[in-house]
Length: 431
Image (cartoon, rainbow, N blue to C red; front, side, top):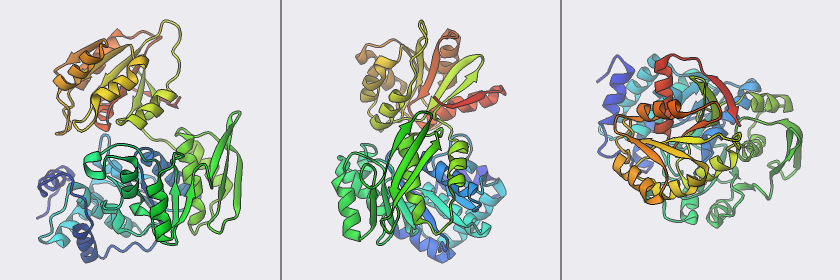
């Protein structure tokens, strides 16, 4: 069976597996073998609770600046599926994706694949066809049993370890860390970006014989005026130092983790390329500020306690008289009461609705119930996220800020509304 449009392929793929998530490598590896998808170029695999997208974006920006043709696979997307697969900085077009999906479908036979597994194989096919120099892969969920882990990484990163997706990964940081460390390989770089110790990650790496580099131990960074300095250790144990680096639009925690991964790649990456990547890296929905209808709108896909704490730490103090209005909704597997409690002091009024673009959306009544119990001021809208966003904009003044957060789907709904309005927005970067 083949389809002529990307929309038809995606609709068909969504219906092919009985569950949205089924961790395990046996099925996807069997189809990859039939497709002969062995990757014979260096691979960077990025796992972690938060910060994966930032690390992938920076690694790709630096590699591009260094002159290497990079294939990048990320998830989820915000507006278009094409965002998930990029070659040399350009998203895959519909024709490339349809061709790759067709190759997967021909090879799968009776093997059932999840939506993510199908997409992972298609991305690898696109990278093979494009003859890229290097591949950067973002883990979808966990690490050890995630589809991208069928590919042997040259260097693997665990950006952070915190509580999220406990139903699949475990109830503690140690259990979750063990799953994420599953992307490590013997005698290869294993980069741990979380400064808080996770014994299971270290044990997994040491048991394997991976070359472990930990933030706060083997590598770290310091802020100096309007630049920052990084120190690390190369694969042979030689100290490394980079000073006066430009501050990127992503968190320095993630930038420092990426810099420690680079020496494990068999490439010549100059300081100039690193600086260029730091200056040019962009990632939508990680705290950047945009202007829309004359109002300040901050977008953040934060959806678990650790990400929310990072978001709150980065929020600027508003001018006297200004208030922060939150456009908010979440998925059903999130601890909405904890999320509200964490953020209540930073938000003056909440504007909530139910997500229409995800079958896993938390019902509006549950979101409103959590806000009622917290005793915060809010308005609820039963006609979608756009209605909540428009109300927040209408109530705002020049001194106010509208914060959109809670999930990728929340930010995607607002970006889709903005795009539909065909308004020009000004991107100011993370502030």
